[in-house]
Image (cartoon, rainbow, N blue to C red):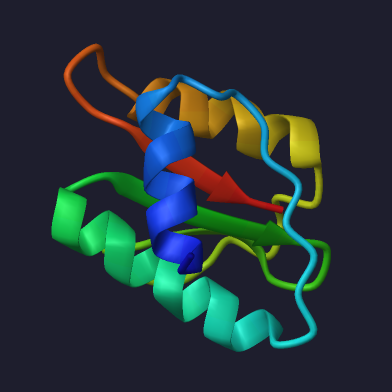
Length: 88
C-alpha cells in the first residue's frame, strides 16, 4: 500500500497523530505534499532549523522554533470541511 493511500485513509478516519518512519525523508514529504495538493488539504512542515513552512504561503518562518506553536497554527488552518496535515 502506498504511503499516500494509507495517510488518506487515516485522515478520513480522523486520526489525530500518525508516526511514519522513513529512510527516504524527502520522498515521503513529496508524496504527502502531492496528496494534500490533490485533496485540497492544508499542508505544513516544521523542523528546528527551518521552522514552520506552510505550503503555498511563501517562505518558512525560522523564528518559529517552538513545535507547540506550529501545532496551534495548524489547528487554525483546519476547517470543519477540510483537513490540515503537519509534518514534524
